[in-house]
Image (cartoon, rainbow, N blue to C red; front, side):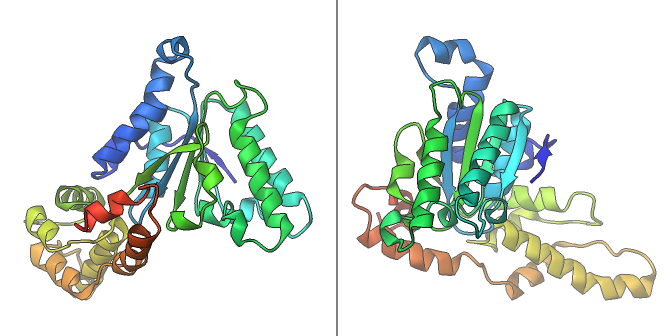
Amino acid sequence: MDVERPKISFEDVGGMDKVKEEIRMKIIFPLQHPDIYKAYGKKIGGGIMMYGPPGCGKTHLARATAGEVNANFIAVGISDILDMWMGSSERNLHAIFEKARSLKPCVLFFDEVDALGASRTDMKQSSGRHLINQFLSELDGVDDSQNDGVLVLAATNAPWHVDPAFRRPGRFDRIIFVPPPDENARESILNIKLKGKPIKEVNFNKIGKKTTNFSGADIEALIDMAIESKMEESMRAGRPIPLDTNDLLQAAKRHKPTTSEWFQTAKNYALFANESGLYDDILTYMKLK
């Protein structure tokens, strides 16, 4: 588990304007205007949970958030915490939070948070419950100022499996849906991903229209497919042959968006397990509301 100082910012993240604005209000503005927030008794810190289909840039956005405010960044994976020995997982989690507190301002990012904070009602073993209780305790902090300046971001593809206690005020009190990039965002991602590569006459608008429901990872995959199809020609010519619009469109035809399966699952939860309105954004995105 490394501590980073990311060099990227929101300019390096295609689209996601609504999500960026939420992060600005919750995380960036408090750090830039601490006196205003303290005047209203608001803490500088807190948590945001991002959810949506895989490959839509949640991790990239978390790293860019740290870059925006020149903060330290710690990416936490499941393997950094989970341990087979009784009590070790809780100690690992506590050590991670303590490290973040010693490096303020610090963005602490938990990927696949549903694996660490699964609903306790679904658990049969007490060890999982102990870890969740420890996680909740760390988010709350021992005193009011302990987590000041610790900015906690989490990502999950399955928010319906996360224990509801994580959504209480002061914990992950902002739950943000990160959808696949829209047409403008897809053009922006293509532009960013193709920088430094040999290209000519690429009609980003045309490709953006032909990649509906593609995630950022899907766009990266189609670029790789287009490059692979150009490699043989380049090897014969002894020089890199630039990619053009047709190369990318042909790759887009061969690649199917990976978000479709996720939306099938999400649709069921949004329609039949949405009493609090938590998944209304999914229904809106799917034009079911």
